[in-house]
Amino acid sequence: MSATSSTFEKTPDDSSKLKTFLSILRKFVGVADIASVRFSLPAHLLEPTPNLEYWNYLDRPEAFASIGQSDDPLGRMLEVLRFWFTKDLKYIKGKPCKPYNSTLGEFFRCTWDVQSTLPEVSPASTSSILDATPSSKESDGKPVKVCYLTEQTSHHPPVSAFYIDCPVRGVTARGFDQISAKFTGTSIRVTPGQHNLGIFINLQSRNNEEYQLTHPAAHLGGLLRGALAVTVSDTCYITCAHTRIKVILQYLEEGWIGRAQNRVEGVIFRYDPDSDTITRIKDVPHGDILAKISGSWHGQLFYTLNGSNEASLLIDIAPLFPVTKTLPPDEEQLSNESRKFWSAVTEAILDKKYNQATKLKQDIEERQRQRAAERQKMNDTWQPRFFTGAVTPLGKPELTDEGMRVLEGLHNHDYKLKEGETKGA
Image 1 (tube, rainbow, N blue to C red):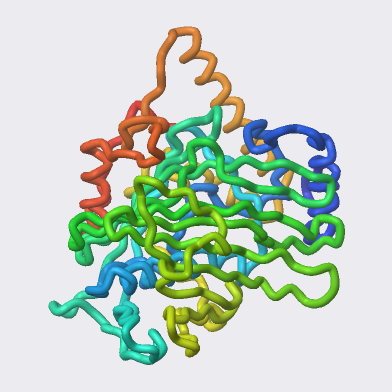
Image 2: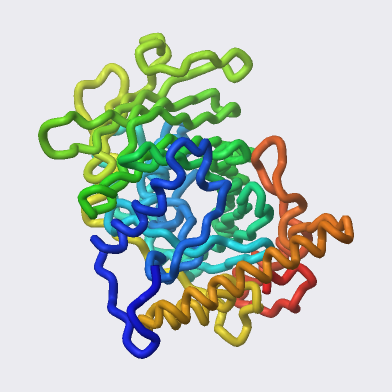
């Protein structure tokens, strides 16, 4: 659906954009995974945001940088949970959007300078975690830096690898982002793809404790009434084999009547990593329970220690908003770096030149198809630049030497990179 003319293009409102989007989606009723189809949308239906920039879990980087402070294993799990509930504020505080589809070899890098980190969790105390005074900076007076690198490592299926590094605190995270989506007729059900096994957090200062955080299924609804909203009614898990502690989180389905409460309940308990069969809260033996989680993932989350009736505040989402990221200067970004790669399309959308934006977007997509055909003709297998493989069986991507240098450069404000043979356009 094009705009009215080349000289003046009417700005579509959210309602009309959703109606057009819905008419396109109806063609995919019954398709097992519309995310793998990678259908092209006209530019006026897109938000001027690259997919790799949009998909990150650091809306509140201080929550990530604060993981691992507690000397108590339960406290560290609560710090992981605190990060978990802050990682997707973009869906709570803003409207869901459809960013640009990533192209093979496209990458994105950025940093956050955390001015204040959250205090360590002391579960032996029933006082609120947030009652304590946050530590403002490291002992040398510098802010805590969190670095992020992600690269599109596969096009069919669409998969991106990511790595998060907070070297001062010795906290890292990695994983593959891949979704599977199915249109039900009234909403889109989004689930992790086969290569998306969750977020893997490593605490170097705690004997390399590793936490695996799996993603729940979500629904993107509101298509019919013209107001997009994300709802979750599924179970997800957080496990740490080293401490033998597991979390089951149950996002509760909303009722037909009344205002959405976005409720979640959970249980933290001791488990045996070698014979882990418990998937439901009700099946957890009472004697293994360490604490329970309750609240709203749009508001306040609480934990209650086993044997206590007093709930303590874990985190209050209400006053929190996504934090601005810092990118390399424009002149030091490569041609396949997300912001620069899509800059012409973004500029056209912001100028409301939707015909031009659609044409530029189609040109990019056609170049990608041509390059894929050339590789197939030459029997050439494409390799990522910053990660060692497109996917891994364990869902944990490994950095190449250059990938490690990129993260080190981000930490030291050294952004220089050479144009590589894997550039996307």
